[in-house]
Image (cartoon, rainbow, N blue to C red; front, side):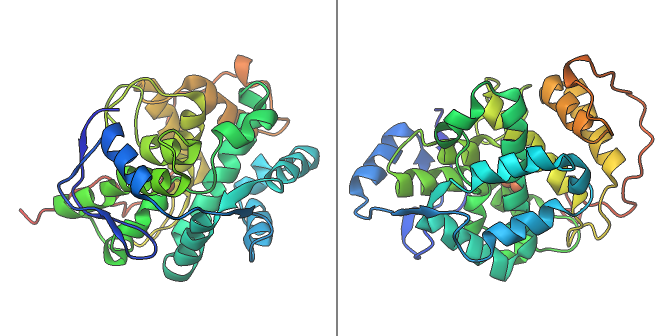
Length: 301
Ligand SMILES: [Fe+2]
Ligand SMILES: [Fe+2]
């Protein structure tokens, strides 16, 4: 990986500072952190923990996910796969933290994981047998434990300093998950680091263009779920049509893969047509929120 300079410290759930603000992150630095790590994290069942399984089932019934998961056989098949997923304790700790302090991030984390795995079942050959090795866990935004809640939940536009603090979460999540998993290449760590990258190199933290299909599944699930959710900075959410149009525009702009966008659109249509032959309208007729501060930087100038 490239050298990435961090703008804020990386701090574990237990309050231990792994790296100070301004440090450079690369594989050599991460190897040193992993060697110094004493703790071994036990893997436990995701669905056996607290209300995770019942919360996922409930969130899957809310529009528009009720349409996406309307094929009962496919939905139950997916849930059967997820029932076997084992995760390390710190991931459950982060879910508890978000559930208590920022419920949006809790729900979002679970739904991005579920949607990316659902799409993986159709798009990635032999996904079921590879789930453990490529799909990680509900942890793409793990690094948000290092972003102040006042910024995560801010009403109104962010200023550029706050934007840098939010962006810190992708590299912070990578560092923390490498540390907990004692691996530089664990899928959870890589997905946390790369889920804001874009095919055209306009993403962060590295600006890479070579993006795996699994990472793209998380990228698209992440943007889609974020648009559909009301937030403190945007009290009205995008409607489903305008969310899909926004994602279509990202594919037009070569930020993300057309195939995955077409698959997501096909799952929103009755009869779920074959995505490979799907015709996608490029007309923009959806209704996006009037007061939308997403992507708007306000430095008070
Ligand atoms: Fe994120
Ligand atoms: Fe996210």
